[in-house]
Image (cartoon, rainbow, N blue to C red; front, side, top):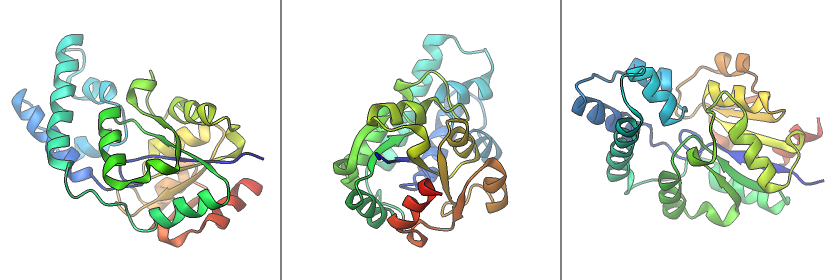
Length: 221
């Protein structure tokens, strides 16, 4: 039986939340709009098109919205290019899953350039059979499209896949896609209760609390 582990990126594998927040603050300031912590919480884990719709409604034309999103990501990459580290437990768990024969993929709302920068910085690309980002989808989480595309590219049935997430929208997307879900609270954007209500099978404070055998048992259950 082929099995898959599909990883969200920001907040799950790495913590670049503060760099994203500062980039949104600075980009929005250039547009004359404040960006608050409440805005960040409300939009965390979503694709840029959905975030811009939340922030500006239909006030930005397509070209203006694309330029704004590019500027925000440029600011983010400038801030995040140095000092990106994997969160606790990630390296050991990815290696353990690899040893058990799991196929692994990234399923993220982030633009591909951001994902490639992080993969290059952390060296985890050697575990991955697919990388699915914003450009590969037309619908953002909680729609399951990103995870279904990842599973399809790995050649694994959704019922044999486990998604690792930190956001409510991501947990909902995993469950809507027919997959198991592990929610990690290390970054702490959502409470354990909220993540369980969204459908997480397991909620952990850190991925160091898990081992590959425990993940495998989720699929077998």
